[in-house]
Image 1 (cartoon, rainbow, N blue to C red):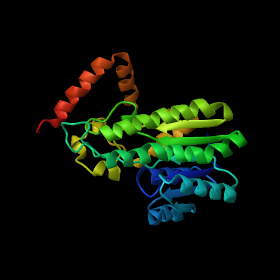
Image 2: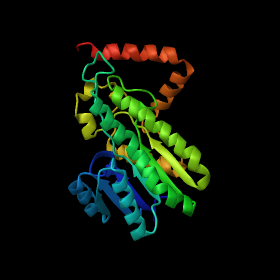
Image 3: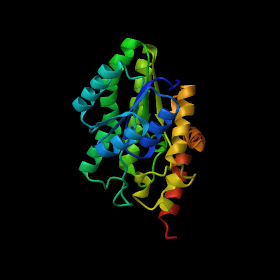
Image 4: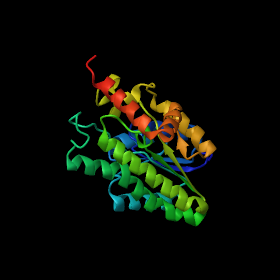
Length: 263
């Protein structure tokens, strides 16, 4: 995947990883970058900086997202790369209970972390399949491959997002549609800054900048790899998990205990 000359759409584009992706794609020569976010002012600011377009919408609203995709395709003829990047975090309110989050918290995370990817795929795969080409990049998290201690809602919905992306790749790969998932650990974004970064185990291997992550995306898209891992050590953790699940769970419990002990 060479971004030069391509029509690219990025959701969650007003800040963080989304904004960094927009800037990196523009730098790489994308023909047009469309910044999408429920924060319309932020999306417009990013787009204005790059000479791109902006769309204000809530990615959990399927019909609204489909209408936006149809409008973009009508204006530019196609969407070459759709980056479904929006997401929400959050930890367990009771650190002693993985089921302590309220139903509305689970439902919101399901809508944003899972169904937004589904809505995006419904909107873009028909056009991509008809053309025999296209790329979908879904921002997930290393929590979707491993788990996030103290974040049952986040981990569960991110695991579901991985499963859906796998289904996309299996179902649409022979139609010329490529799929990648972006799975970083700690990244210096507003989501990370919501809590005490030093006490979050996903940050133990270092906190990357959004620009670092965007560079990893460029490398992953060029190689057309399904897994894009800005923190390369995640692959080692995945192998350990698959090699001895019980031992891995025991290690995660020990890490949890360490993180919960007063410093």
